[in-house]
Length: 145
Image (cartoon, rainbow, N blue to C red; front, top):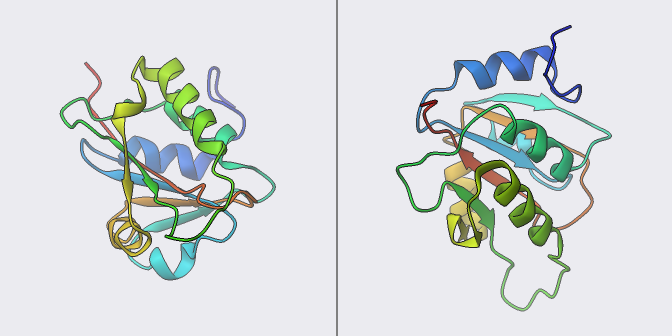
């Protein structure tokens, strides 16, 4: 065990986050996210029994967001005509502000299939059992300065 590492972060996930370089991405997928099929070229880490907000908070405590892009965080845009509850996004905005002192403008939105396309480029995909729809997040890692 190590001091200061959130207990939700597994040894494998800690190693992968450490291996990531500037510009690499990590996806945190909700329970409906096709982690295994999208993550064929990435490392997939399962954190069953956990939701996206607690994992997002833990990861943001360990890695910086890319300071050289306007939107280092991407969310999956709600599909047209879908009225799914996306109130979880406010939790994300709050966690990002707490960790990085950034506002909602640092978060972008990608159409569902664009999101999948970007997720296929990820270094690591974290699969969760989050029940909220449209709870998927892509984080672009920055530099420690």
